[in-house]
Image 1 (tube, helix red, strand yellow):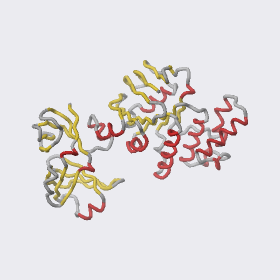
Image 2 (cartoon, one colour; image 1 turned 90 degrees about the vertical axis):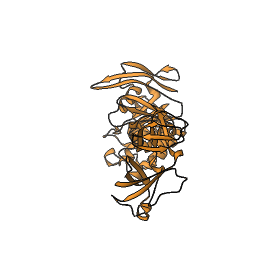
Image 3 (spheres, helix red, strand yellow; image 1 turned 180 degrees about the horizontal axis):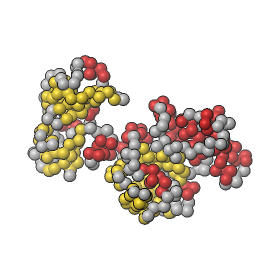
Image 4 (cartoon, helix red, strand yellow; image 1 turned 90 degrees about the horizontal axis):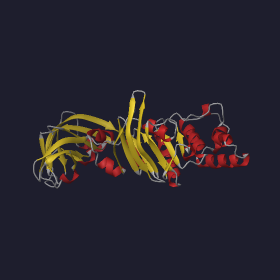
Length: 344
């Protein structure tokens, strides 16, 4: 197990504050946060490139301060040596350790085949695509057989197809037993890859758990927004049936509580739109006005004002079917069972 224990660091004008998390051997941990949150700084501390002001990094019970070969860091900009061929880049660290030539050649051959770059071994870095450079950087790091692989925004610069291919490759590497810590600002990467997720904000870990725990039950509006949940409201539980959102709109609920202050959230996929009032099985029915229509990757986000603004995710076909457009009236339905909460 890799453990980050009470790590704090003042670095220029930024402060990492008491960072704690653990990653089981063979697990895939994604550290998710906005740019400037401290993600890369944590990786550099784990890699031993920067010393913390306090705290320690422990692997299987032993401080790794003097055992840097346990981890291997792949930088966001790849850090490939521009004057060396692909083969020589991958072999560089092995040569520095004075490995025998036959061992180096066998290892380079093994890794280039695994990364599907064996046809590129004599190429110069300047002739490679971003996806190819990322594979070379991975191979060079894996050549030293680290127990834990550290990845700094590995998919950011790649197009959609290359990103999907590299995700599959990273899962394959992880499934072979290598622990991975992967930092990103993209929650879809976390959903696709992680066994466990940590959310970092302004130098602090603000929530961690499985992707399901974090993405379905965010503990703050910041986390909800970061993880794609658009419907997140301050609320007061009025009774065992009624909760009032933003002191404005009353919803029926099945929270198992009769009073209290909380955050209420529901996914935009759980919001149903119709031209007419819906049947009684959908107990929360409101008429509103469409204020914004936003095409996105997986459909269309519709923003409706019902006294508070509600976000609904629907298909392009549904937009055409219901003839939805800005300023038109529409009925909004949310099942009580779709409403989640977090007590304040």
